[in-house]
Length: 347
Image (cartoon, rainbow, N blue to C red; front, side):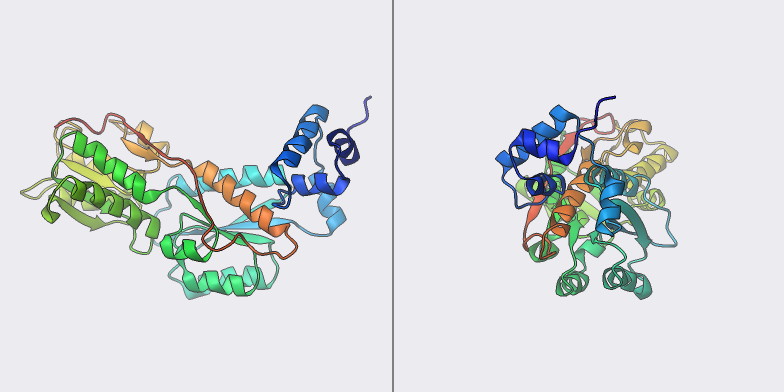
């Protein structure tokens, strides 16, 4: 039986020191791209497999990362957002030799928020990924920085992004492109179901949409805005109010796909033909957007990629000697695109 290649074999083939191979495999930022490519080519050529369990036993650490999700205890969960982020994070952790735990906490409950700092203070994990609205909590971010504890933000708003490293899409531009799409379709009367007021990236989606309307010369009364909470039920309830007035919109825009699916349910219940009578759009391009009828026009947000990238950046921070996260204002944008399906049509 052939002997399995070792890290020393990788170092020999790549022509680098053993420590350099270790830095590359641990995603350390202190390695040039040229050296990283040589090491990874040697890894692939030799079919070298990292023994993560042995590495953890040798280091005496759990090498554990945590993703913090927010959930209202009285509301239904988002159908896909959390699981997609988690899947991407799990994949990156597996590749980089870390374990992953998730915590779903109520942002309105102070004991739940305190648990985040407890995770850092008690060394129960090596780093944190914060999702909205925790990723927009300036006090929490500053407290973690004061502790020198590694963390990365997902979908943070402008203020939080200036404080720490973040990963996400350009939500404002995405909202603008969605608005431009509907304007090109001839729509001039809109309703918008936004996310919770403490969700800054969702607010940017709305702002970008409004930018498009202003650019088209439309007045303020061209749009009615209602605040949702990202749930299917809030889409049902708010659409019931928005679609039964005397001046019904021709396009209903929702800040995520779950609310758009709920709005579509209400439109069908009211006897409206989508998209002949009403166009409906979502955001995220989650699986629900493809299984409702008609399928939803939406913005594709690569949630798994965002989860993976957040973990990669967090691991790079954890393995640094100083244990700090990327510099404040370090924003890592991943690409998005508009997905046009059957729920939007020409007026």
